Amino acid sequence: MSSYEALSNNSHHLLPLSFFNHNRPWMKRNAPLSLSSFFHSSFLTPSILKFPSLDSQSPPRSTVSCHPYQPTMPINLQAHAFAGNPLRTKNPKPETPNSINSALEILKNLILETTQEGFPPNLKVLPFQKGKPLAWTSASAASDSKPIWHLGWISLDDCKGILAKSGNALSENLLVFLGSEEDTAYWAIDVTDVVDGSGLDLGVNRFAFIELRTLMVATDWADSSSMGELAIAGHARALLEWHNISRFCGHCGAKTLPIDAGKRKQCLNEMCKKRTYPRIDPVVIMLVIDKENDRALLSRQSRFVPRMWSCLAGFIEPGESLEEAVRRETWEETGIEVGEVVYHSSQPWPVGPNSMPCQLMVGFFAYAKSFEIRVDKKELEDAQWHSRDDVKNASTFAEYDKAQRTAAVKVDQMCKGVEKGQNFNTDFSVESGELAPMFIPGPFAIAHHLISSWVNQIAPDCIELPSNLQH
Image (cartoon, rainbow, N blue to C red):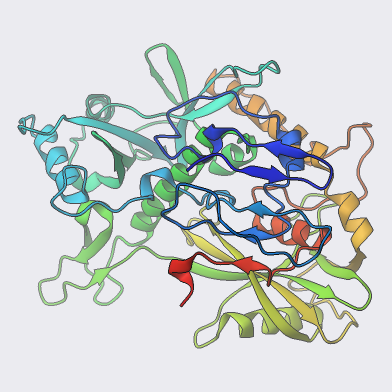
């Protein structure tokens, strides 16, 4: 995809071509923009969303204008963390060399140490331990010398060696297919039972298993390579954790076996043979808005770090529409009655509890019909109306920049074998060194974009869909 202009309220910023590069973006390293300047380019807080055609190589031909003072700006499909996985941008046909069937056949042959003519056996494996992907770090090419993390891809031979040390043999049922790029197939494997928590020392690079949430915070949002790697890691974790909780058939109780390169599982009971598919748990997340008084409803949970406020959210119940879930959850948790519900965007969220390998966060603006708050203390610690100015002050980007840098250093230390405790509650201070009275979740969360959209007076109905979606 070609480079587009992202316009801010004050000046024009040109995002580098590397941000939109889908040609193996997680393998290339281009000098990234600074995190603060990237936020202020308004890319992650778009004022008017415009979707270029999904198969287009040029910017949209027209614009949508809702308010004369608002800038126009295209939206990229990788705007949310964990979305825009570069390995999932295409779905090759079964007969093509880089399809899932071909990749599985190559894997089987390589495990058996046989060759297959016509297909270069280029294969990479991403190990996980207890839901943590293997990672390593390098120095940034930018002047700030901030460390950059990378996924710890290893060869199939290294994977065999790791398993052999614990007396285990590698089989295709232990790996899940992540996707392919040109002549390379990418797989993931869970080595929790065969590797201790100290990490792996393979060659010159020191590898460590890092929590995906830590990598999420440590990701430089201006770097398309890091964003792509984060999405790959999220996809892999969701698949592997689903395999861990679906070892037995929910219908008859017999054991299940991975099929189709780990994309599905099938019951081994010949009388059953029920197939199961990766689990996705849909969650509605909504910013409740008081139009008349120009304020938004934010809440706190007891598990939140001090001073953080966010949107309401809740799981969808069986037989319930998305809009009904928004209204029900808002009423149950705060006593606020909601009328109009407007869709904003969605985000995969593979960093929840292991019992829910991948939640799908579906974001909405919800417009309040009543305004008296009655907090359900079983669900929330507090909920309050906040003015637009107060929320805008809470979204100081310097805080997220500091948190990202702190997390990046922590990942670097872990990869080098330095264990240092890190209290992230203290990582959200403004540039003056004083604690901010409140803050909202960082740009890795859809809540941030819901809140930022409202702060910048973004009209969610000002969206132009590509022609192939206008049905």
